[in-house]
Image (tube, rainbow, N blue to C red; front, side, top):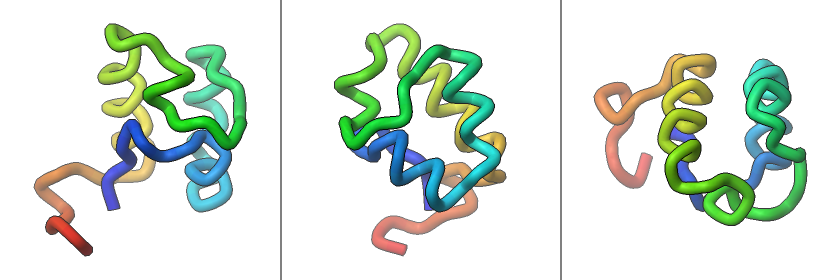
Length: 66
């Protein structure tokens, strides 16, 4: 599964505990709000890339709907 901007930081950290450090690095609170609401556009893509690197996930390792 690829971490996406419509996911919440709380749900992400519940599934992948290692992501907490990334959220702390970027000062993103752990809440029930979607990342696209919490993070500005210019920082969002960097955050998503780093989160997916931490969980070893990318669009090449995942198929749509799976």
